Length: 210
Ligand SMILES: [Zn+2]
Image (cartoon, rainbow, N blue to C red; front, top):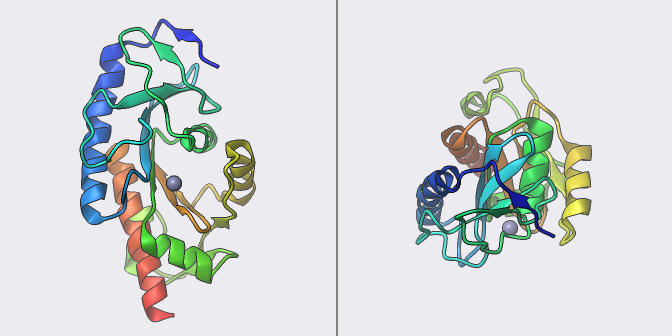
């Protein structure tokens, strides 16, 4: 299903695409977007909800500003004049759910190994407390009990979105999808990058001291 979106400018989408390409290259360099895995999105319109998301099946270390797709609230492709209709990742549906529920304007999804290992070890959620880096995700360094939720994986984005909504704590800007990877979000791409980096560090730390 696709519909013509006339109010969204191609320039806006490609500007977002340029920013997504920079972030994706950075995460690829860290080793969190192996193969063609992972995807990053930025909200380019709230009403109606539209996200620019990295296109499916491409090496995330080599993206161009035009390697971007536009999706709506259910992750469906939306046609925009002047934007080549590339296939969005199937996971764009969860990006849209995260953006709608949390109000975040940027969402990062990576297959960071330590997130997957932590989700395997603690399927009920990863408990963190009394560690300075919690401040990096907007929580307290002391006496603050933080749980990074873990939800079961699904290829059905509707089902995965429902699991995310059920597990979501508005104070915690990340979720682990078991046997899959990590989603993290923020008010803009740089904020979402910092959240992703801090959450991954916290999960690595939890595993290291377990
Ligand atoms: Zn994935």
